[in-house]
Length: 602
Image (tube, rainbow, N blue to C red; front, side, top):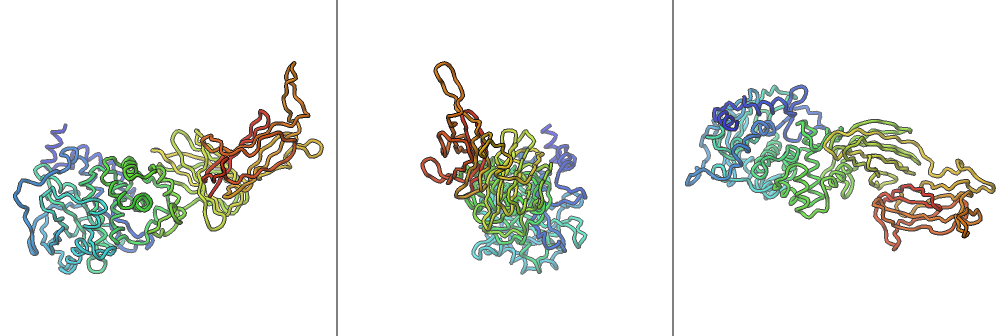
């Protein structure tokens, strides 16, 4: 089977290779309408009044996915004594891809400019669209000066963050940047077009792989990409595609969502990312971070994640390590975090990221270098009760918002198997508080919250399959003395434990409870055990964390029947402040135990 695959590649009939045809048919990179939506980030908020640029790299990567398996990563230059150096005015013939027919063709180009790291070639016949001055400006951006840094070009910035590109293909350290009218059936107006691409076929020996130029090479469109009036967008495309070339030499089988997120980040760090951005993803955030369909929202979400990872977990060194990691996808992120000494898992980063997309606030729950065009969309409930069955994509989040309430009880149930991560964002004033919603081993949990302006339930799926879940929310009264049965003298009939007030809290809280008049102590009189109503019951009130460790003993002694309230100042037995989180408080009356949960937010 391997021999026949190699033979097919040598004949150029790769389109009929079974594995390639299967990838083409099953590829998720096409929408229902047949439009291919992949590539550089697009300003979605502008209404897309003009042509929509996309990249051809993901499609060509899918088609050539078997090349590395067949031949390995190119590891050495051809046996020549010295590479040919080209100058202005030299002409060469190159292979290029026709996206409208899915075939390769040859075209001739002339060299416009030469730098230390690149050649700029222009396809013959495109002189009206791209003049010598535009070619020189593109060279200047790639070699020496960008919108982000006047003293560093795209090449140096990308190389510093993602790694040096390999020069093992042809022995020439320069990148061939080919400007051409990419054949893509562009029809004008709001139609999509291929703004650029990196074709990994060019990294391989043409004796093995047909249509290879056997050079490090990038393709940039000039119709309708505008070199006369919007050349900064051209520079963004160049940064995007150059990252793909570098990533291939470092980790050729990286998953799509990581690779494309890095290319979006390349546009950002060179100063050529179109702003604002992110509208499509934030409008519909239940979009799997690790999934890939090739729609514009996918490019937005992956860029935002990579930018967030860099900002909060090690900076650009983290991204460089991520590209070097041989593990792919989540495994690669985990490896990079560990290598950089970050005390966090992928799930930790993800949980903070989904909150940042909703709050766009300060610190870990925001982006210091970005201003999101909107917060992540939420389902809003302004009246209770609320009762819903829904589903969430793997490694995605739903947001459920409850507004203006005093007391609310929320029950959540996720369908096992698999993991859910449920968080609460509580706003009572100007500073939001974030905490985990406690779930048991069956993905079920309930919590009562008091005194909030806005309360948001953030439901995330940290598993590889879609998850179904339900929630129920209703108004709740923290203390309900009217429901107690009483003995004479207003003494409660039975012992009860009530919800703490307030909840959540940040400095102190009150825990109400009652001791029933029918409680009694069991005593030994030497001839057997009897209950004596004259001895007050033994009562303990304790606070535990979710690991079952006892944090504080609030009460331990004999207590006469009646109603009581004990305060907790958020400190442990040694007088130290405990961290934010969910805590369990337990009332034990003789042998009877009652527990509830409370939420501390620092």
